[in-house]
Image 1 (cartoon, helix red, strand yellow):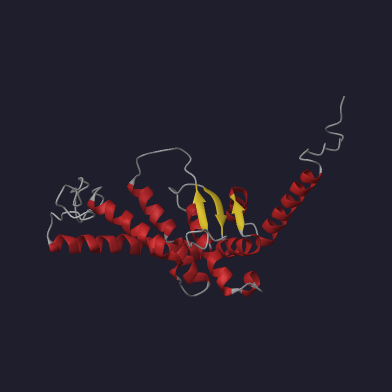
Image 2 (cartoon, one colour; image 1 turned 90 degrees about the vertical axis):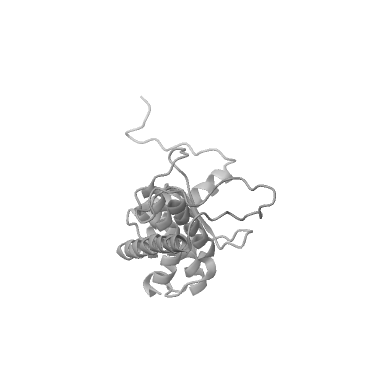
Length: 238
């Protein structure tokens, strides 16, 4: 660990924070990813150590090839960040790996997004009929084609992971600072993410969050009423 940024923090806490920060940093760097709304290391009931929430700028039922590649890259950001920051990996990326594998396989077998396999739908979405095993999709292609599909899935995921590692290395200071803020504050939102992506130091962001917390406490003590701003030369009444 970088002692300057993570001094006094446990490896376990840094690992979880780095994982979520990896997702968030790549969401900010990848052109076709949705904006980050919330990042937290507070555990959820389903066993996850935290989550990174993005929100699309606009609703769309269609997703392009580049959008899917960026999404795979962002999703692999957690595993990549663990490897870079704590020099180890955990089972925390298991759900991420299932997601990227599913996306890459659909790109190849359903959406015709592989030059190697061509414009062919290899997996059928037809309903299961009586007598067919539930969850079993009938294979209409050879073992040789199946091997090519598996190879293309591995290629897409491997290239996306290499890209994730490269981007996080290039923006390591952002990754470290965001991880440290998460260790200290547990949850950050769009404003803090944008500050960190713009290069703000973790101490600046934590000070900003502390000031925001102080303002909220003052408003709470005042019964939810905003304090009237002091009049200045620029704002005094005529």
